Amino acid sequence: MNRILLRSGKSPYDVLSLEEALHRDVIATNAGNLIFSDAAHKILETPGTEVVSNGIGTDVSAAARINEEYDAFVVPLANAFRPSFEGRLKRMTRLISKLRIPVVVLGVGAQTGLSYDPARLKPMEQSVREFCAAVLDRSASIGVRGEFTEQYLRDMGFRDVEVIGCPSLFLYGRDLDVQKRLPELTSHARIAVNGSHSAVQKQGLDRIISRTHARYPNLCFVGQNISDARQLHWRDLSDPNALVTAMPTHPDHPMYREGKVRVYVDPVTWIDDLRDFDFSFGSRIHGNIAALLAGTPATVLCGDSRTLELCRYFDIPHVRLDKVAKDPEAADPARLYEQADLSGLVGGHGERFDRFVGFLDKNGLRNTFTHGDGGAAFEKRMRALSFPPGVRPWNDTDLASLSSRFGWLQSQVTELSQHNAQLRRELAKAQKVKQKAAAAVPAPAASVYRRARRVVGRPLRRALQAGKQ
Image 1 (tube, one colour):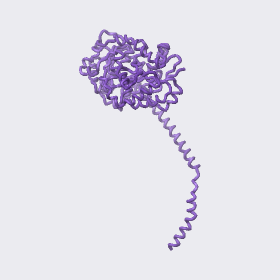
Image 2 (cartoon, helix red, strand yellow):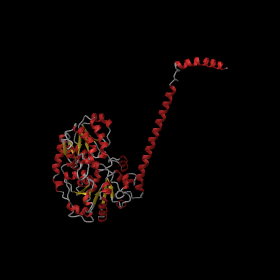
Image 3 (cartoon, helix red, strand yellow):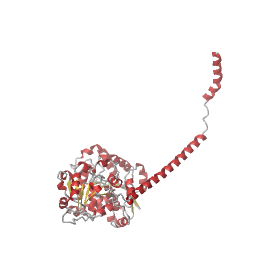
Image 4 (tube, one colour):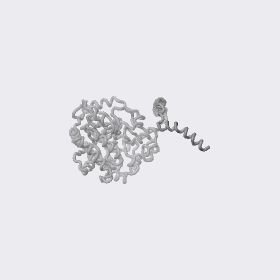
């Protein structure tokens, strides 16, 4: 049995309650991560190959165990070449440097502005160099998301760089059927909108969402951050993101109060729900990829290089957010839907899939579409599982709504109490052992000097006292 260790928040087969998923943050702060990690899991799972999720955290001390138990380490990444990710990139480099097995990176990207100016990445260049060098010492090539990242690495002198996009759009292999089911969007169309906190707060997406909300009563906002999910399920406002009150996931937003917001902790329910929508748009690349995988047309409002280069590579309909933010009418869903050309996305998908498979072959990785059943066993197993629905705004006051939440909290209190009691017992036991050990140790014998001083000291003191008298 060939065993592949996959960097992912959780296995696609792990079914967790909403409370547990939010508590453990299995989406690694962003649900979009699970879209491409689940796709990678399905693609790499072939007869004779077991794929194991290692979680998002990087444990450098686990290198010896990984070398012993696995045949390859596969690392799907998104915008890893960005300043805020540098610390984690360094830890990953330290781990990879200790591995003796192949290490394959799927779709890493660099993040900068829409101008593709890499100046902001200059301070972390050495970290990127060390990461790529460590990977290429253990693989034939490194897979990147698009044109900007390819040029960024080539300018550093790396030649074994291949543009492969993101594994997420190859969830169904060569099949990608996206069609406009309506001749045009009316005010009654079902529309999904998505966006990041920075796009809402700094790039004008808030005005676009407000305008769309006023015109389209069947609009639904799909968030992706763990803070979004916790605001919906717990009304938890402790995260700094809660300062962005214009975000529809905030309890003060009218879309929250109207129940028109969702966050998903499993891609399968996310994609399934989007099948019923007529159109999706917004600044989230994987929010719109989820729609495309559901067969629903989508347009990305690009706000940075990470979304722009991926849209260009896959021919996903897109416009620049900085342009439509100045004229919200240009971002009207009906207009975006009319302008969306899906021919390049669908027509060029087969060629891009072949390029992706060629990259896997070159790096010694088998895939289910060439060497397996095309993912049939994966899909059958997934359909047999019962995943929780998308997280909804907590506007309910009914007993069932309260019971599910407080029941989980009570179980956590019980578990923590038991754990604390066990720790207290272990501490008391350790203290008793320490006390017995201390009592069993004899008092140290007096030194030769101290014994001599006792013998000579008394007569000497008597003589001195007699002299004083």
